[in-house]
Amino acid sequence: MSADSTQRPSRPETARCFFALWPPETVARQLAGIAADYAQAAGGRPTRFETIHLTLAFLGDVAVEHLPELQRVAGEIDARAFELALDRFGIWQHNRLFWAGCVSPPALLDLAGALSKRLLAAGFAVADGKRPFAPHVTLVRKLARFDVALPATNALAFYCGSFVLVQSRLSSKGSGYEVLASFPLAA
Image (tube, rainbow, N blue to C red; front, side):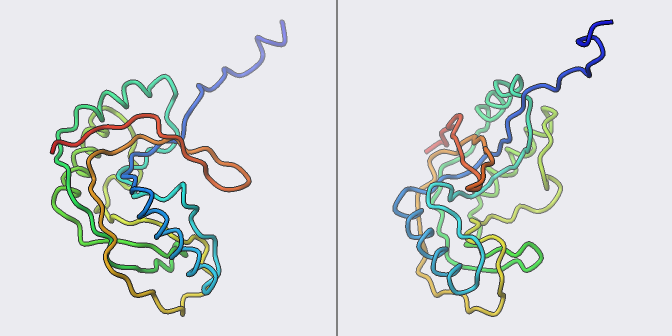
């Protein structure tokens, strides 16, 4: 018997994926500044400018061979473009996160709901797919203190004319993200 015949079958190559809204650079830079300031006061790891996003649906590891199907499903989403205004900050102590959020415009809820429904129907696993959608942008992870006052803010508004499929790659510096595909929203 050869050594090759005693080995376990290889696992398919996977990509850690999620769908997101990506804010424009000006908004991302403002949020990164807020994250850095808050992390300095409360401890924790601020989100890097280039990774700031609002997750619509997190899938986790997806077989690379299924990425075309994933893109096909997302491309069939019929949703409207909208204005999003991040107008509040909060802390989730159980996750040790500082985040920016918003009152969800109906178009955002429609997009997230349609995406989750289509993905589940196509056989993709959606993390937290059965929980209510809680739109937020994570600004600081691993908070050390919860008694630091939340910053005051004017709403950081931006137009959402598309959503993206992103692959996450873990490294010693944290996650790095690569946009795999972009999907337009109807004007």
